[in-house]
Length: 461
Ligand code: ARG
Image 1 (spheres, helix red, strand yellow):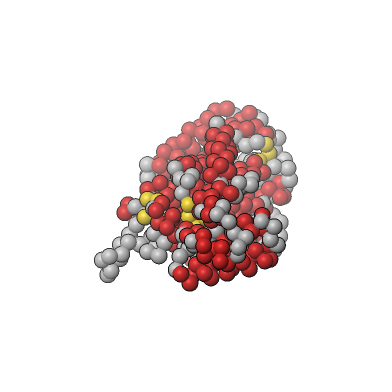
Image 2: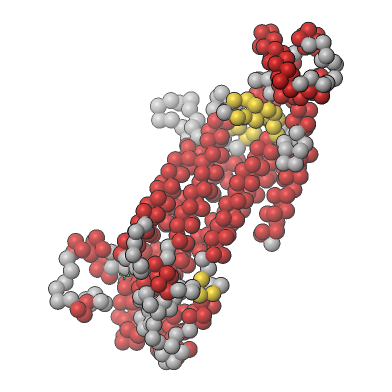
C-alpha cells in the first residue's frame, strides 16, 4: 500500500527521506495514547451522526485488535509509514476495510500528536509525583529515626554550626515537596484536550470536543486551536520540572558521595547499591549517586534543546516540532529510574551517628554561641567576636575543640566568662538553642517533621 497522503505525488519518496523523516522509531511509544484518542474520536463521530454506530463500533474493535497486536509483538512497524498515527491508521484500513478510512474525519495529525503527546506528558507527571512521594516518605523515615543526631552544618563546605541530621534530611523533604507541587501545577494548567482542533483552524464538521475531552479524562478543552496545535509548553514544563528535580537529586547525591568518603564516613552505602573497581580490590564506589549527579546534565540538555527548537517557529505546526519527543521520553525515563534508585540507596544506607558526632567536635562549631554568650553579658558584638577569636586561637594552640577548652583558659582570655559558659559551649545545647521557627533544635525539627508527615498524608489521601 502506498502512503496514505500520496494522492498529489507522482513519484515515490526516497528511502533516505523515509529514514530522515520518520518518527515511528520513537513515537511508537505513544501507541496506547494514539489508540485511546482514536476510540474517543470515533465514539464522538458516531454520537454526532458523522459515522454510524456500526462504523464506530468496527473502528473501535479494529483499534483494540491493533493494540493487542502491538502488545503481543505481532505488529509490523514499517518506517515507510512515517509515524505511529499513519502506521495504526493503515493497519486499521487493512483490518476493517473502507470504514477505517473514515476515522480521520475532522482530525489532523497535528491535533492527533498534540493529544497523544499531551496524554503521555500528563500521565508522566502523575507517575513522577507518585515516585517523589515515595522518596519523601523514605526521607521522612530517616529523619524520624535521627532527630537527635548531631553533625557539622556547613557553609562553603567548612564546618559552621552543629545541626541535627533529621533537620538536614528535612531540607530535602522541603525541596521534593516543592517538586511535587510544580508537577501538580503543570498537570492542572495543561489538562485540556486538543482534539478537534484539526490542522490549525478547527473543522466544519459538527463535532463535540467536550465529549471527547470527557471521554479522555481531561478537565476541559483548549480555547484557541491555532495555539493548541503549536503549543508544547506542557512538554517544556515537564522538562523544566524534571531539571529542578534532578538538580535537587544531584545535590543530595553530592552529599552522599562526600559522606561516604573516608574523610567523612558519615554514611556507609549498602553493598547492594555500590560497585567495585576493576583494578583496585579495596574499592567500594558510590556509582549510584555519581550517575544521578551525571544524568542531571542530559536532563538540562533536553530542556535547552526543546526551548531552542521552538524558538522562532511561526504558527502553527512545523515539522521541527517532531524533535519534541525524544528528549521528553529520555528525561521522564531518567527521572523515574532516578527516583526509584535514590529511594533504595537512601533506605539501605547505614548512618554512622558516632562519626557525625565526632566530626562535630572539629572546627569550633560553638564559636558563635560563645560570642552570643558574651553579648548577653553586656559586651558589644564586635568585641565579643574578637574575644571568641582569641578563645579559638587558644583552643587550636592546645589542640582541643572550643567546646572542650577548660574554663580557666577561657577565664584567662576574659574574666567576664563564668562557669555557665560550659553549657553554652556544649554541642547539643548549641543545636537546641536554635529553637526559632524553622531552626535546627530537636523541638523545632520535630515540628517540621510533623508538618511534612501531615502534608504527605493529605496529598496521598
Ligand atoms: N510525526 C509528527 C510529529 O511527531 C506528527 C505530526 C505530523 N504532522 C504533519 N503535518 N506532518 O510531530
